[in-house]
Image 1 (cartoon, rainbow, N blue to C red):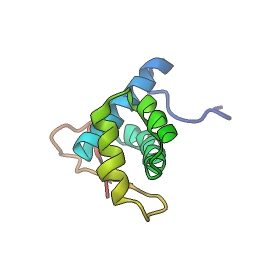
Image 2 (image 1 turned 120 degrees about the vertical axis):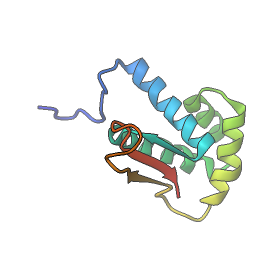
Image 3 (image 1 turned 90 degrees about the vertical axis):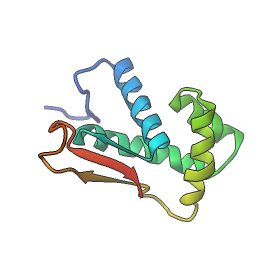
Image 4 (image 1 turned 180 degrees about the vertical axis):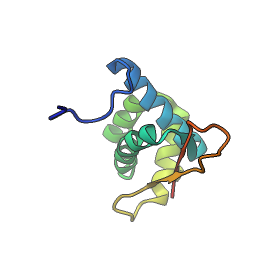
Length: 117
């Protein structure tokens, strides 16, 4: 039984899971919508929503926290603090949506689409 085991492992060690979430989050911020598997989208949602919540309050500590989670890329940090956080300044949460794609999509394994609302 999986008592007290939170999150999915995706058959990867921890450092690869961290790199996967970081890469998916960076792609989501850049493109504001990505196609991925449903399981990855469900794991990415809380990760990205916590980052957007931190970005709503623009101070040095939050910039450093978001930068460390996303891999020290200044362009992505500027985008999340500039355009994305400003868009959700009054919303208390729920910044992303997961939409299931058709089973006959281009790639049957990529069956979910996650995007900012």
